[in-house]
Image (cartoon, rainbow, N blue to C red):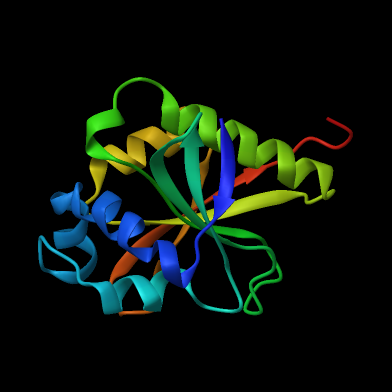
Length: 156
């Protein structure tokens, strides 16, 4: 498994992955289908890093993260999504593990995430990976989110 940068030319692949998860899209934007312009807004921001999750030559997911949120100086994983066809095989856990390893190499002390209140499946996933609820906040689009944090052990 490896990561590959999302570019303007590969946004159509990200759109296909995102639209394979209509329930998430409804939680996030109130609509089951997203459009190309949404992908530019999510994945081409200069402040975040946006990558595909690849298994050999197959694009199986997307990830978007911020190494230092200016609001709290913490790294934030904004999105980790596996294409619906590849869910249930442990790829999300593997992708997160690889991401966490990279964050440890950067000597970061924690990772934060925001989970939309209604997204029970995501909440359970992140808790299974050791994330702990720390507070309730608001997302960029005004949705209530549960903020979770995972402390990263030093020297791992």
